[in-house]
Every structure is written in C-alpha cells, then in structure tokens.
Length: 248
Image 1 (cartoon, rainbow, N blue to C red):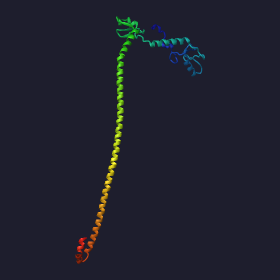
Image 2: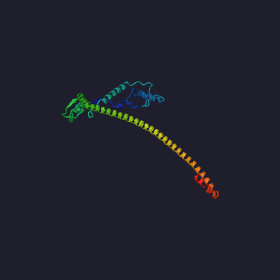
Image 3: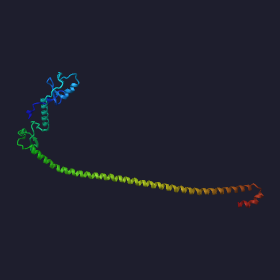
Image 4: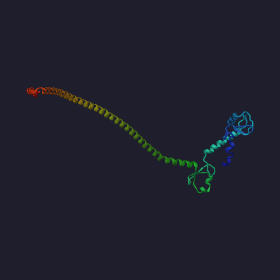
C-alpha cells in the first residue's frame, strides 16, 4: 500500500494559495495556478503575467485537465486514508483482532514475533462481539440512569413543594401580622379615646371644685373685710357688735 503513494502533498499545491489546486489553469510558461488565484493576482497588475516567473500570459488560460484529475484522485485517496485506521508500525489496514493482547493488528503484525502463538479473529467479527459486550454493559447503566432520573424528579417535586409551602406560609404570616397591626391600631385608638374621655371628666370635676373654692374664698374675703372694718371702731362698739361678728 505504501508503494501507491507516489506523489506528495507538495506536488498538488498551488504556489499562490499554498493549498491543493482548485481548477488549475496552464499558463504559457507551463506553470499551473488555481484559476481564482491567477485572476485575483492579475487584478493588481497592469498586464497579465505568471505569478511565479513573471512571464506574460494569455487572457484565458486553459484548464489543466490532467492536473485537475490528479488532484481529485489525490484528494479522494487522502480522504479515504483519513477515514481508515492503519497500523502505526506497518501502515497497513487493521484486518485482525488479537484476542490475547486485546488490540487490532494488521497481517504483518500477525506474523511477527510479538504476536507469536496468539489467537486472532477477523476485525468484523471482533467488532460485532465487542459491540455486543458493550450493549450488555449498557443495560445496568441505563437502569442506573433510570433510577437516578426518577430520584432527581422526586427531589425536583420536593423542591417545588417546599417552594410552594414557603410562599403560602409567608403569605399567611403577612396576613396575620396585618390583622394584628389593624387590631392593635384599633385598640390603641380605643384606649386613647378612653384616656381622653377620663381626662376630660376629671378635669371638669376639678374645674368645678376650683370654681366652688373661688366662690368660698370670695365669701371669706368679704367676711374678713367686714371684720376688719369693725376692728377700726371704738371699744364700746366692738363689744356691742361682738356677738354679730362671731355669727359671721
């Protein structure tokens, strides 16, 4: 298989874009360049010339069909090789599976001393067996996944219940405290009204007592004045009016 690799990547690389040729054109100087590359190159030049050797070229150079076909074949082969897993030691396809070393090998590996007296199976059969074994390991894993998902759903439902219960409790607390605030406010107003009424009544009683005292004081003052007047008369008059003075 290695003998088929006659060409390298560089043989199919455009010297302008440094990528695999796309629609390569053949210039008069025999150089090949991607069609898009040479057209873009010519936009910046006063006349058409080869971007490699600078020789002049015709307006519409022909497609290099041979090179294009080789490029397509090269890309197809490269893509095929990229999709194939080759033996790292011999660059050959891995066609066998070593049952003793548990690894895929090529035909050259099978005949080497490293795998002497080992048991082999075709890769296709080994792949089927391995896939079947993997499927069996998936059974308990899928069951574990199912149990975990069920447990997860249970916890999610519990979380939703806790959230809902918490919000309901918060609402009830707010409502109860609002009622309590309203009750306390009414109770406060009621008691304040009672205190004001009690104060008014007591003040009225006191005021009436004061008014009574004022009248009695005025009466006493009037008597004092009358008595004092009698103190200013002669001695005989004092004796004569003594009895009336005592009555006052």
